[in-house]
Image (cartoon, rainbow, N blue to C red; front, side, top):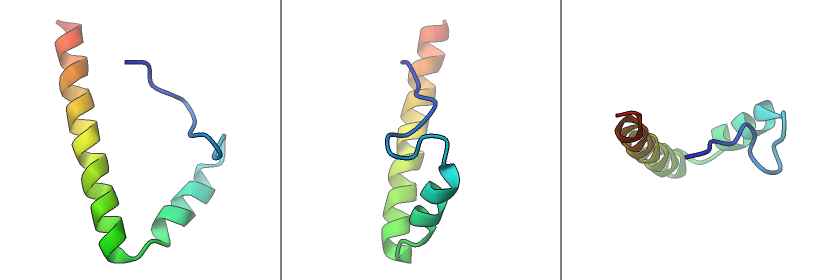
Length: 52
């Protein structure tokens, strides 16, 4: 998988992205972080398989 260096609309400005994510309600933030965690785990498994 090719990973991007930046997120569209947040090019070189992760501070703005962090602020926007941090301003989410806690219940929404919990869902977002759970989904992000799942995606990172899935990608790491795929990357490990490709490295073999």
